[in-house]
Length: 474
Figure 1 (cartoon, rainbow, N blue to C red):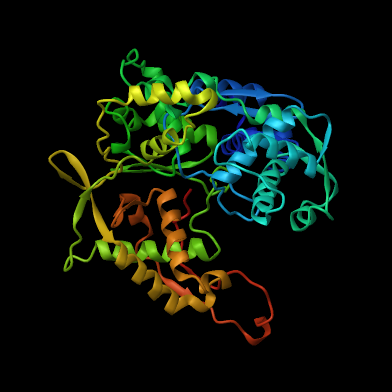
Figure 2 (cartoon, rainbow, N blue to C red; figure 1 turned 180 degrees about the horizontal axis):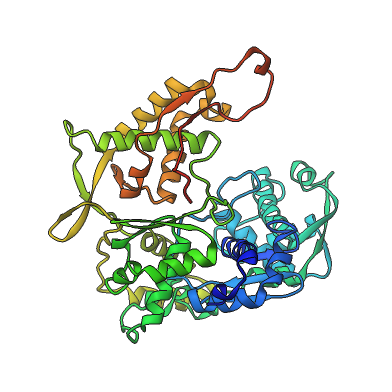
C-alpha cells in the first residue's frame, strides 16, 4: 500500500484525495468542486495503485476527468440520482437522462435545449410507455431535471439562455450548452455490454452475479477486498451482512487499519460490526447528525425508538430480517426489462433462468437475539412510528421547515427513508426492524433555543437539536 510510504505531513492531503475519489466516482473540472480534480491528479499514481490493491477498483485520470470504475458486490437502493433541489429521480427522469446521454454522444460541440429535447423525444418513441411531449409542463420539468444533473457534473455547460425559461415556455425561452465530450463518454461506462445481460445482476461481480454454477472459490485477497469495499460503501457493516468466509476477515485489525489509513477516517468497532466515522464530511453523502428538519427529526425519532426498545415493561416483538434490499431492487429492475425490440431474447432468458427458483428471505443486519440460528430484530409498528412523529411535530413543529409543518405524514416517510439509508432500521410491511447501530444515538438531550426579538426577521436553520457529542457518523 502506497499510503504507508507517504510522508506524515503529506498524508492528510492524500487522504483528502482518497475521500473525494471514493465519494465521487466521476470528478471533472467543476464537479464536485474546482479543487477536486487537481488534488486527485497530484496523487494519481498512488491512488491508482492503492485503489486496485485495497478494493479492486480501477482509476483513469485525464486532463479533464478522473473516473473510478468500482466493483459492485450488491445493488444499493440508497444512492438514487437527485435533482438540483434534492428530489429523488423517478423512472421518467432516469429514462430522459439515459436518452440525453445518447443524444449528446452523437452531437457536436454545442446544442440547444430544444434540439436536445427533440432528440430525446424521438428516442422515446422507440420505447413503449415512454414519451417526451414539450407541450406538457411535467415532461419539460422532468427533462430539465435530467439536463441539470448533467450540467452539475460538467457534461454540458450553459453558454447562453436559461433552462428555467424554456421549461416555463418553450416558445419563448431557450438555452445553449457547450458539450464536454470527454465527460459525456466518461459518464456511462458499464463493466459489461448491456446487450449481453439477461439480469441486472450481470453488472455485479461474478461471484455476486452467479445464479446456478458456483464460481471458483475466492482467494484470501479477493475476500479481503470485498470486506474493504463494504467498509467504504456502507454506513455500517454488520457482521451478519457478510458471507461466512468474510466475517473473520472483518475482525482482522489490519483490514480495518488499511482502510483507516487510506481514507483518514476512524473505525468504530462493536460486537455487531464496524462503522467508519467521517468527521470530515468529504466521503459521506449524508451527514448525520446534521442540520435541517429531516436530519434533526430523524435523530429525535432514533432516540425515541431506542427508548422504546429499552422499555422492559413493554417488550417489543422480535422479527427475522426482511429480504435483502439489494435483492429486492434486482428483482424490480429485472421485472422492468422491456420485452420488446432488442431486449426480447434477454427477457426470455431471464424468465427461463428464474424457473424453479424460490426467493427466500435473506436475513440482514445484526442483533443480540437469534431464533433457530436466524438473527431477529425488535419490531416497532407503523402506527407507533406515525404517532411518534406526530408527537414530535406537536412539540417541536414550530421549528420545522414550512413544507414539513404542512405535511407531517410526508415528513414521517422521508425520515424513515433516511434512517433506512443509514442502516439504522429496516423497513418491513408493518413497521421498522431496529438495527443495532441505532443504539449509538440513545440518551441524547433535546434543547430548544428561543429566538430573541432581534432574531425574528433573521433566516436561520432549525432551532432545535440534540446534544450530539460523540455521535458524528457517516
